[in-house]
Image (cartoon, rainbow, N blue to C red; front, top):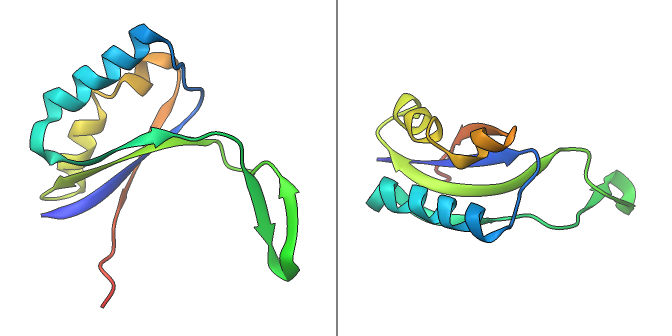
Length: 99
C-alpha cells in the first residue's frame, strides 16, 4: 500500500462539534489512517537568501496521512472528509519513497 497525505485548505473550526465530527470520520476510516495529523497554526515563509516573512502564501490549514492501494482509493477517503462540509478543500498527494 502507498501512503497519501490529505492536505486541507481553508478554515478550520476547532469547536467541540467539529472535533467529534472529525474523530468520527477518522474512526470510520479505520486502519487506513496512518497519522490523523493536526490543524496548522501561524506560519512563516523562508525564501532563498534566508529571507523570512510572516505568513506562508499557501492556504494549507492541516493534514492527515492515509494508506491506500492507489490515488483513486485515497480520493474516496477524502470525499467523506468533514473539511468539505466547512467550505474547505482536500488535496491528495502521494508520498514518493526515497531510497
